[in-house]
Amino acid sequence: MPPAEPPNPPGQVWAHTGQPFTHREFDTLVLGAGRMGASCALYLRQFAPTLSLLLVEEGGLPNEDGATLLAPGVWSGLGVPAERQREAGWTRAQLETAFGDISFQTRPLVDLHAAPGANRVPSRDLDLDAALVDPALVDTDALAWASVGTLAATYRPGALALNAAQAAIRAGAHLMLNTRAQLCGDGSVTLERLTVTNTHQIVVHETHRVRARTIVVALGAGGPHAIDHDLGVHSAHARAYRQFPRLNTSSTDASPLLRAHGLTLRPQNGGYTVVPAIHHRDPAGYVPVGGKLTGVPTGLRRETLEDLVAAMDALPALGTDALETGRSLSDVPGAWFALPHGKPDGLPLHEQVAPGVHLLLGGPHADTLGVSTAFDLAARIAGVEGRPWEELE
Ligand code: ADP
Image (cartoon, rainbow, N blue to C red; front, side, top):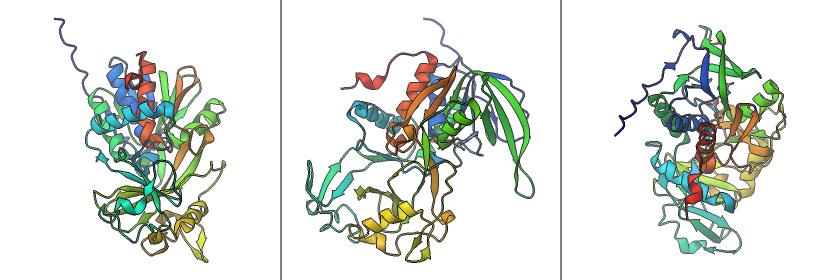
């Protein structure tokens, strides 16, 4: 029997500027440690353990802010086109087992409608009370029909990013935190190590230029801008600002996910997180601002406010104090999401945008197809054939 390969020693972590950094070259740089970058880094360690890898993150933790932390963490086959359903199923299995404890939990998704349709049953028959849905939440006269997705699941994308980054480090990836990356267009990247002054200003402490054969741009909503601005590659991708107001109507671990009027209600921390639809890309330069409800300023952007008002009759709790609308934007959690191809329903993708440079985009469907997309890119970079989901029944 050949001797077993010695395992890679764990990688190095540069968390702050007091830790000197002298490297000049890596085989692979992964820019951005959201769930897309962190899971891609982990798969790369598994496929290509001999390639040196540096994961770079602007925040002080893998995914300190960004889409991953606020993403609803709802796996659902709803809205996934037929040709990517098997891939979604494979992702579900990975979420269940491959990333440690990410609070993965199977939960039915009750999709509520006013009218009958294929696979819909009268919503009264579902006995939502018994399923621990507060009766004040759903008007079953207005939403008289429902279909149920029994395979839906919830999990914490932030935990996924953190666990994936930690596992990647254990497998030999290096991680640089508090560092802003900028593409240079010649196969190199500028790394600005950030620090905080005693007046709480974030400033650049030092700058390094690092070269790599392969660069993965996993900067979330900032990715398209980076390749556009720094590499001069025009892309059709865009971004949108999405907010997640909280609804303090009681839920338990056993409560189902609810969907109605384009809104998803995700049971979380004893209440619900309201996940509004994304209607369109936000134009370059858009600055999120709160709208007014009957003359009173709220922290919700206008489109989301309109969606909630339109759903209030069918979901009466939205019209009560249980909904936290805030008074200004900072009161309501929100983040920028990438929109692949500029479309609100754009699916996760990766694409080579310059020699050795790959853009990795998650976006609104990253909960369901993000991990498989990161896996696919890692396999491609490592020269490993095959998409395991294509072998599934
Ligand atoms: P995704 O779902 O694609 O992973 P996120 O927005 O969660 O999207 O992740 C992108 C990550 O990239 C965030 O953690 C963010 O802090 C980080 N990031 C954004 N811009 C830069 C940059 N210029 N340099 C380093 N990290 C960045």
